Amino acid sequence: MKNIVILISGRGSNFEAILRTARAENWEAEGLRLAAVISNRPDAAGLNRAREAGIPAVGMDHKAYPSREAFEEALAAEIDKFEPALIVLAGFMRVLTEGFVSKYEGRILNIHPALLPLFPGLHTHERAIEAGCRVHGATVHFVSAVLDGGAIIGQAVVPVLPTDDADALAARCLRSEHILYPRCVREVALGRVVAEEGKARMSDETARALTVFDV
Image (tube, rainbow, N blue to C red; front, side):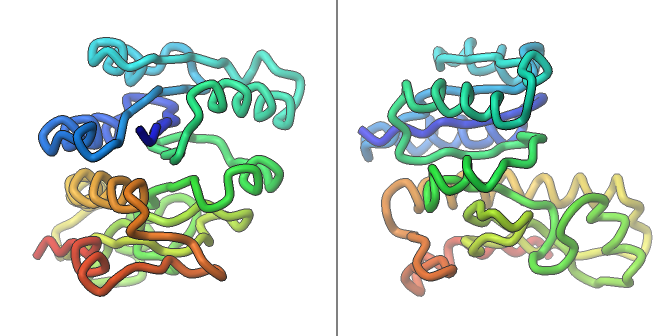
């Protein structure tokens, strides 16, 4: 069984999307298990959802540690208890150090609310509207030492409408994230997507499945 550990900081809507999909598609029959949900905020709403689903849930207050490195050392120790094949960042609002990322190289995924390499960092929806983009979206990528710079696994594309404000565009992107992220998690966990030489390697069929269009 391949264990998947999910890291969150808040409500965990992408975690919930992954959970719904895993149950609907019976991932456990394919040898995939959602093994744990861990948050750097002990009061994160997503932890309660995990517990309701019978998934081990762990709250670790990053403020209780003297340094970023000390927190990450404790976090890694907790993660390793579950022997993860894959670590999924689902709204985990911590920038990870190079040391942490290198420990799990090729096994950490993140989702970013933009079509990378466009608009790395924050305020992506406002920036897309300000730039006059006609399309926007979300990107699932392997985590690297470069912020939002890892190999791209899949992308969801949504229209930017003339009447959109940042909130409306964010809501449209989030709906597509909830389709895209579970697909990417499953394909990576099954070994159909791998990180090689800075690229995500996959078949044409898999690439098509991991490109989502909302028009």
